[in-house]
Image (cartoon, rainbow, N blue to C red; front, side, top):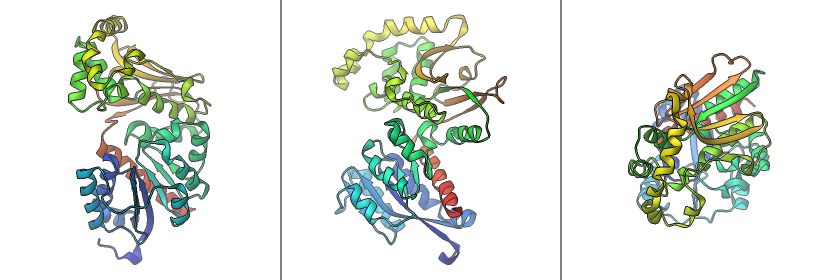
Amino acid sequence: MTETSSHLSFRRIFVLGFGGVGRALVRQIISARELHAKRNRLYLQIIGLADSSGVYVDFAGITDQRLGQLIETKTKTGRLGVEQIPFSTSYLVSALPAGTIIVDTSATNQTVPVLLEAGRRDWGIVLANKLPLAGELAWFDGITMVPARWETTVGAALPVIATLNTLLNSGDHVQRIEGSLSGTLGYIAAQLEAGIRFGDAVRDARQRGYTEPDPRQDLGGLDAARKALILARMLGYRLEMHDVSVESLYPSEMDGLSVDEFMHEVDRLNEPMARRATELTRAGRKLRYTALVEDGACQVALAGVDSQNKLGTIRTSDSMVVFTTRFYRDNPLAISGRGAGQEVTASGVLGDIIGLSRELGLR
């Protein structure tokens, strides 16, 4: 570090979730030390990490060397590998210093009590975890009405949330949001459009690492629905998840199968999915798995979009969000690019941490 500590502002960080995104985030914080010092006169001091098995804290700041050891151990063993303090809301809220930013890179709603308490204390919250914002409306309200950033909950590092907030803060009226919010389903839709059998498309996507280990977690459309619900709630739609219309790409009776059984049985969906693709792609339309937020309603489903529609122009595995507003009516505002991946998501989380740190410093 080229700056002395006397010239830097310190911001304490506590990371919930130490999976792929959490570890990528910590690596990026370490590698950007000099940049943060020069550009923002800021030092991000990681004082704690938590995974599903417990909590590791050092209120003096975990050294970069120790962080590297914890990353290596977690990667190899799936655990932090230290004598840990059991995870509990009461412990965290009583022990953490005031002004700590809680960063949630997990994939569980068990973090919600910590986030809500952090919000009540005005500590600062950064989310990559969609579940707290797509869960109960009270959770959404409690998190978004305090110092918080959640850019990566919808499009990884794509500035979807920042753009929507700018539109809303400017007084523009957002009439419609359309999106292709799942790179996985975008890839599978493109394969179907090209005449690839559904089962082959699913196996190919799984082999490429585009799906979760259980592809049904993607094929069910729930991840895209959560992202759409977050955008809908930001527009003021008081919707719960059960209000969102979700088209699953497999029938619910296949939920009871093991992963191996599902992969063996998926070919029986080839003919119905081929018919669905043919129906939707008539007249040269492009097959997309789309989200639509409009007129108080929210839905995600397969759709055929005109080739001139902006959603019809994106690369198959990319994400796109299109805003039709009072000022962007004739030529809607579109944001597109890589919308998934651990490294790019971590970069978006880090950007949110820096932005929130600067905001908290001005308060």
